Image (cartoon, rainbow, N blue to C red):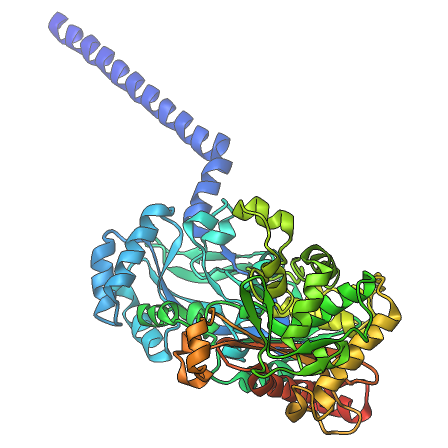
Length: 626
């Protein structure tokens, strides 16, 4: 009995202890459940939502670039790309192998994907291939269950409808480089592009826009089930240029296969209507991913298709600088227009002989004839009497040796030498013979085609310091430009250069004689249409010195020389003569004579510009059709 009672008490104690232990465990479990489900419920709800819902940035549509009439120069097109998210696949290499069995993947693309995965966070989608065709998209979607982390992304790619004709103006966009990453998550998106050159680069921040966002529900392996919410981004701003694309295309085509450039600008407003450079490149190739072969072709081309020659090319201007030399002499009180020099084909200075382009000379030559027939001997004499520093000062007033400030990458300032410049940069004094050479636009003198157009515009507009402009407006997409598309707003009130009106009238009159009198060097290239005549000045700049032995044995014609040794052909002008509105500058690298090569190009471009002039009824109709 006693033993049974003892066993009962022991069982009871053990039962109580076991029950107590269970109660403690249950209490702890209940407390833990209360803590997780009540106190920490909000936190775990967020974590669960983060696993179920992904927030994705949406790249905004890049702003359009249009010409002065709203013609689209840079737009966006829908495109398909395949991307991979490293965090959503266990083995990236295996997944790429499977994807490579469906669509072609190059070794370069594989290396790039590996590199991008290493330098970016695991949840960022990495572009594997862009610009997929629909058949490739369909194959990837059908095999989606076997491709964890792989998805098709629908985006937009940049497209340039006019291709090479506007490439140097617009530039291009390309993928963001490591150096361009600033921490902005928008730059890390696989399809995001930034401007690399031209207007695309200069106005990149305004063209980008603001990102949108998309909330999508995903399953356990990260594949999208549905979109829950979407907020579209704000499109980039629209950039309207002063360019008339139809005229730009005409100028580009007119240059043909030459290594050349042409600039057309309004002499009153400074608006640039055409700025073409040849040869060019296809900006769409950079958007889609330029091939190694095409890149080598561009960089190996001796005619520099990647260089915007209109703003970056620096050339000896040759005889087109003679108007500046004449103005320096007139305004400095050194000479009068009736100053005369006898040209016998050369002039001697010490034991050196400086030759005229005309072997047997021009005979008695005054300033009018000197410009009309481009007599070198006359301007040797004028330059010697005037001095290089006075010439440089006058050149600066007409924009030479200064940055035009048009706002394009690679813009150069050229060079107008002075005595102080040579001593500071060459360490030796200036020589009088160098003044003679500078007087015909050779030697150290360098200028860009844009600078020459500015010079011509300032001569034509009565002596106002007009500056070139390329961008008319940068505005939010959808905003309406109030200014008339053809004529633009009231031109800026540019300051006067303070040149005597009589001197300026004399110079422009002599330029008129260059093209519109039988003895003028550009008479054969004149515009014959009534009311559209142009005035101008030819120039031929040597790229190498001609030795005395070459002169004695007879000069070889340009077309018989190697291309690289031929003279540059230059022409500047304006039209119409009676009421100047447009200025032009043409430079043809190694083209030969300015009268034979550059002047006809300028004539055709200025004629087309006037035919498209919106100030006239017929012109406005052509603009609307163009």
